[in-house]
Length: 422
Length: 215
Image (cartoon, rainbow over all chains, first blue to last red):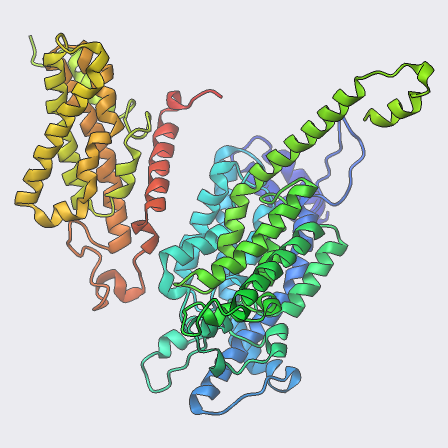
């Protein structure tokens, strides 16, 4: 008898037991359940929650692999830089190497394991206590979390943050599909406010930089935004191509705009993510960037100003540095926490892009604001939807009222009336 | 007759658990979020409120038959303001550092909803002894929550309790800090205090299901 049949039979055996939800979670994760519909609709599509989640994970795999190589690459690049050796990034020359892969995998994979281990444990515990099925919601969150934290985040901190994010951000609202805030970003926000020294500065983006700090072999790697925020943009050696392909320091998965773009296209092709949110978020960030560039061009801001560096940064470059691309593609498009109405999605996305760049420029403590902008808009998404729906109702009421002035058939207005009524 | 009848006992004990001013009535949240970053401040704040509330209830209860109902709010404000000024002056005289930590929040005891609420709801209609017990009970209920929040926020946020470094020294890396533990800065921020209040409410309601509202 195959494993699948075994599981089908065991399910019957465990039915009603306390641990049943935990077992069923494993069962449905491995195979499609053998249940058939007994009432209501008898047609089922196969793109259930599990498939949706897996599609997103597939689109994240290239980003994760790149993050692993980049973790190693940035470490060795920083070591070289400390010795005074300049390094030119080349994909097959010094990027895709065993050395980079081993170093990267050794640091990134523990993050993935802790994220999934802790998060799924909590999901299982809550499912057993509350007696409902384990939902697949954490599959994507668990993959997103390691990609949006700095490489050297201590594992216990990540574990604490995951507990906080899953319990406070998701479970107390009722679990998957009921959460107001994006759980992955809740986890990042917790880390950011709780342990700020591990989330910013020029030491956390490169593996071992914290351990080696102060010693003879000290290395460091400042992010592009970090350089600009300190007005040291001229010292930066990264070209636009580096920024686009991702050979820059940053959170594990956020650096490669190219792969994020491909992942985003894949999500659009499979219709998992909303193109409206992505497009309007891009437009929003470009608009804000243009406003800042305009302010600089008009000469309203002096060069010694703290904000000059980031404000004079070419508007379109905001999209290829920092977490903006990653946030727009994988975070803003979360169907649960985003707006549901089509017009709402335009507003929601636009404001995410707009506010991200705004916070990025004006936040004195930390030159990045994508996660804050998305969390803020998560909170406002239901309000946006409410007014969009209400606006639509009012519009149609008005139309109905106008149609009430009934022209009689004799006047030849029957056609018009038909067109007026909804 | 015993010192406290059954009703009297419930006046003191109810606010401590099932009728808690903070977790059930959700009053006095502002100060609970603002000053609980240190356990010491929480304790002093609790004692201050205990004093203001016990005394205030007694005074209002004594005057309840002569206060014209049209101006009762002003009378109540005068009483509570007087008591708060006494507390403020005492703190400034004997615990200056602490009064600086508490800053405006001692003065803001005046606006603490719990105090006006108890004046209106209880002291205006009950005898002196019972009003005193009610005041003490509610202030204690407020204080208990403040101290619980203060305990967790100071322990996890600063690694200290009442100023003692119970988890070790974060700079010299002793105790827990030697194995990589770090203080949680989020605990020192007010949003986390609100989340802690929420967690207390969660624990309380899952222990006593009667408290969960129908909706």
